[in-house]
Image (cartoon, rainbow, N blue to C red):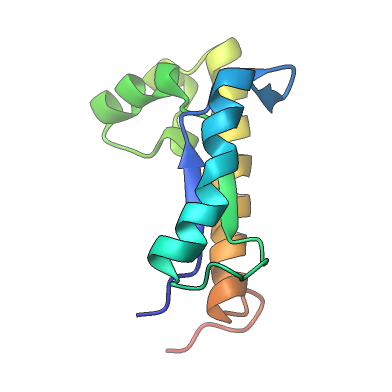
Length: 114
């Protein structure tokens, strides 16, 4: 097994950055990941794949609709600010998928094998 990195979820945001109380915990993650997961405490590489908001307002909607949060439609209740959150969620998860693919050596532009 070769870990590709880690994802930090449920961080509280204020002005597009995590609040100070959570930032203190986030600052500890890289060192713990390198020493406990990779067993390479001297590694200085950035292994964070993404910082994802919790999108708690979309979670229950998505569970009820039986679809991913980033695929919710107005018919599922994603209207107004929720619709904007769905768009942001889709962008965040797309960036995460691209980061995972890049670290795994997968070319997303290559034609699919059949």
